[in-house]
Length: 231
Image (cartoon, rainbow, N blue to C red; front, side, top):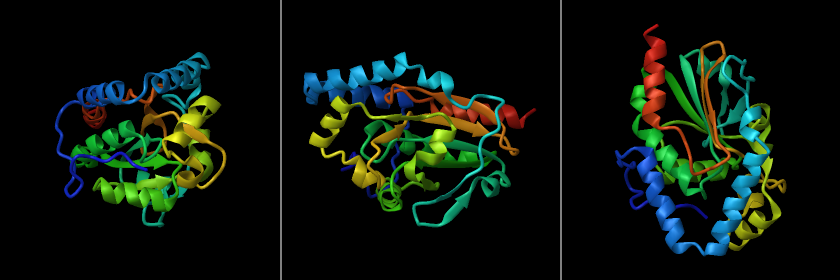
């Protein structure tokens, strides 16, 4: 299962702020998703917020762990090699089945040339390499999508959680088969997060939110990179 964009033959060109894109998707969910299902999702987010997961993430000033992961083509990509090219933007996403992850990836795709002036961009998800390939191909992404098997890297960033049983049941009914898409039976996901790493791996920016319908604006990331580069 995946979220289908209105047009997949060309890269997305929606220039609206991400908050407007997400507001539209929330409206569609409110209109078409059964109220009892919406309540379960809202409860899951509320429970995560009560656990203060985002308060325990890797924060600004910390040293990010080094990693080696397969990209959407099965090639090994290392953080050390990425950082030799400049500062690095990392986006942790849940998967191709999440409309908000897809929306964020398409929005980041549009600003990739501006990011590349200062460094690079990669996205990390717990999906298998095959699922990452499908995501990369279907949404015409121009940056690597890395497969974090077992959420090993996400765990080092303090982002992982286990999907609650009621939400798991909803996902199963909606054919969001995480054991298939992620290749394990853990039902673990990362809370969505965006990081900017300096060339030595130091965290310059960290944003994570238990609410998967909230992500930082791509323009905010570009502005931060520009401000850092001008120092």
